[in-house]
Length: 463
Image 1 (tube, rainbow, N blue to C red):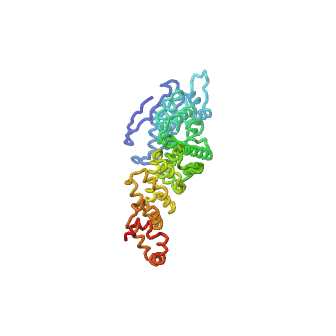
Image 2: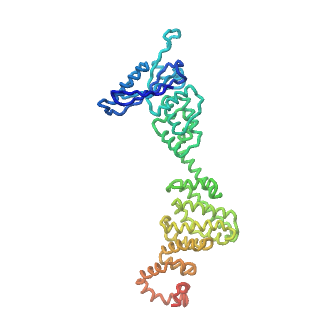
Image 3: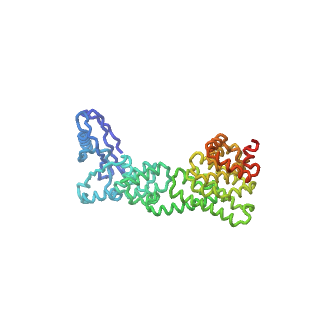
């Protein structure tokens, strides 16, 4: 390879660099083709009063004279490198050059004293010049496998595709399809595959790796099957296993769509199976069922994932009206300590998500959440962990529902009321209550005896 030489052009007042001359296959080995690598000069800026393309034309013509080459430089182009190549190699390796040579090439007579005729061809540069030199050099070393990083190799593939170097395209395709990709690597590869420069010919391995040989409908079918299988396996396995990790990653940052619907349907199917276990067992929840524990862990796990993803409403509305899980966990507290703790943490998370406005439930579902599931918090979590969330959730309930809890489970829920908030609710409705209290007081006392349980809890009896 002949290195570039800096030439000072006094007329223009700037240094110019002669294009390198590369002898592919070794210096002076009978190369009969000169390939000029040219780049279009898009700028028409004025340099010392002269148009840049005029300068480029004069400079290149001077270079041609020095090299002793009969090369005509066209307007708007500059030569960036000159490659010396054997026509036999070009014909064998490049479909593009095979076509070029077949149209204009004339074989010299074997016995001619003139020897072989020299041809000059031009090739527009669309990538780094180093990649062109590498590509042409590989015509002489077809078994080289020393590819670099993905970014450089894609540039090399771009050049190989440009001159239709089929053998090199196939090797690069096999290389790229076989190595692991980083996120950045995959982005680069997919961007190139989506560009007009990407040729689908002779790179089948890369196309297959990218999935470009699969139709949209085929992909949908495979995604659905994989997601369905993943959610069922995840709900039946240890959360540390890959199926669980796969579903977790799948839901990370995703919006409600086909994937979430498949996962939700799988989770709801597990809930239906739990309910069926309860119906089939005449002694539920007294009988301990090890398989039931696995179901409970799976539901707790997927519910937590869905809550974190912000898409849990559909599953929660199916779950909270059912007493099956709470009854079982409370009955077998010692035997299901781990499962009970998992579920209690998820219940607390539901409380927190509701009051934060990230889990949107109807009033009857919020009432069921407290009424059916709160005992798990009392059983498995320290009071200081859930007291604030419970108070906040309890305060959002309508007065009649707060009253209902205090009347039926006053000893439990009296500690969660916000006295000021509850008093405000009573005051707001006091005018409407005045007339009703007088007429209903006698009947109410007859129904509840001399004092109701609610009176006792609230301290009314003492008044």
